[in-house]
View 1 (cartoon, one colour):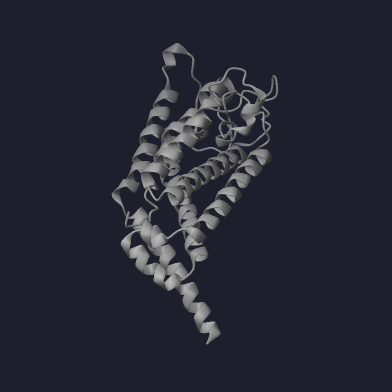
View 2: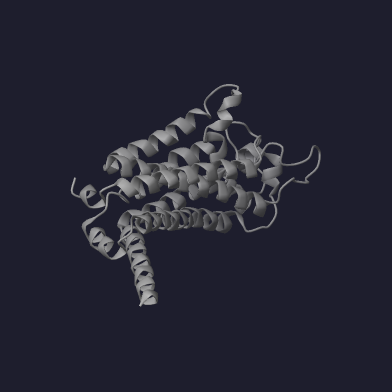
Length: 290
């Protein structure tokens, strides 16, 4: 009897979570990251072709297209983060069908956990939809490779890689393209998930998705300010700006990647805990009626 009860609760949890995910990604607006990734990939691939007569370009490959796009902290803030906020802006308040599903859950803790898993899944889906076209365009236009290109060594700024990538006078890089790509994806993923959580928690407190969006955009704007300060001052490292992308306002990375990962994990733990305690007191059913 008790075993069947637990199985029914687990089934209700996964059913509710699956409904949340499907109701989001089945919307036409989730085609936007594909189009945006394709257009930005084409733009950077075209720039990297350059004009042979000017002799300012060298042969590029797929990594140049990837890092020239994802290596720009301004692009990550103004395009990648803001687009994601728009896509998940109505994850809360709860819709009518979602309210009916809550009767089977009978647990605010499971409800909040379902929202977290939904947001986590949407973050992964968004990154795949956005980055896959960039990789595809880069590979088809400039060729596939496991190594850095001549262009990367010739002009690191245009290729979006750290200025100190290569040891002085050599072509020996301190990090491989695959490792740099993996670390870049990890940082952007954590930034996206944190930003989405921030907006969701604000919506949970205010019962207004518009306030959640405004809060999320404010998070991005404050983070972006950190890249605009001259110097920059030492306290800027506590702002999200130096942890969102592999490179911040400086052409070299000054903060270890594990430190940035820890930074985002602290944010995530705080936001999840805050949302959990709020959900215990929140009248979930009244939210959607307002």
